[in-house]
Image (cartoon, rainbow, N blue to C red; front, side, top):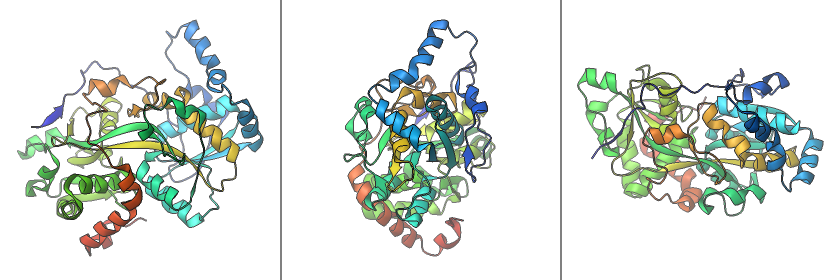
Length: 396
């Protein structure tokens, strides 16, 4: 049975997006002038709440005084972010505001970050990785490119599933995989919305589906692992070969399909449903429906990690502690990112629940298998696709 998600009432307050003004292709530096962007603009904010906000850095720092001083001595931090750029900018600007440490950041897909640090091979140009699915993180950890760190604030994680057992990465949010569809265009074409994964193989969806690139996007790698875990190895790969016949575009970033559904350029997008919420709530695309596949779906754990051999190791460790605190993760919902948070002391984004999303209504994802085999599975899919992979999966 189709599990179609109802839209939020039209009166839902549109959340403001805090932009950073930087190009996603160039490194950007946080500046003091941008600090006011990370603060709430609600005039009704009480003095008591303001006092709590002022005290937040000291509370978050409990027991971290020595690390904070060592991080300040590093003087700088370079962040590669695979979350959406508005959230990345806000998180970096707030870190700089709280600790007085200069932050440079660049938005890259998880696959791009993975490729970059593999090429740099132990001499990374960045210090930390922030956001994006864990599958590329696990590949990087297996290649010895991430630095293990036992974070104090990891005690607030809701479950051990939201961290690497050896401390190579820590989860900061959880996102549900599904479909975003342009209901108006499908209605015009006389086509029903897909209710489940195998519906996408129907010829009527040929040329209507967008997915991200298996070589560049952690989202697409999650799709590969999900299909193999759901249907078995051979059938899962065959599913992706069959799906390719109906796909019009493979985007570089996992959020790419969601950004084109409302405009009608993409009719059915495969990706994380919180990206669809952003398009509905923040960008006003009421023509988008969200669909959770009826036979079950998987989820991402968005992560953060330290690059091994980084130039600012203490600032990097402080970033991990910061990323595992409300000071960081609660900025997501204020900046158009509506993933479920995985910390017990953080406030969940209410809008996600209003769209009917349930963070527990997902299949059991085999992280160990994904950690060991993601690279191999992607290579097998590309081989199975044959010549189709030559033109449709370019990484440049």
